[in-house]
Amino acid sequence: MSEKKKMGRPPAGTEPVMVRMTHEMVEAIDAYRRVAEDLPSRPEVIRRAVEAYLNEKKKERG
Image (cartoon, helix red, strand yellow):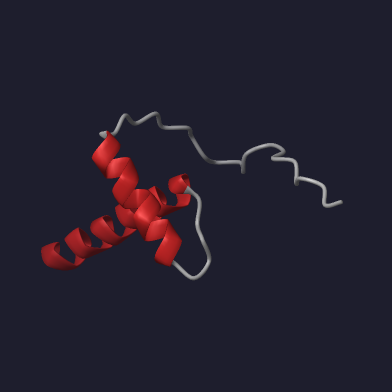
């Protein structure tokens, strides 16, 4: 029988952010998760998307 890993404390230097999304957006996130090699969590998908967006905007600003 496998044991479920406990979450533990969140990493230092992080903040929780509560975001409401439409059902359609959550479905799109879940669809992306299913095709990603590492099956990231919903929060991880959102972190990656925000990071990619911010990096792109940073490149546009020069």
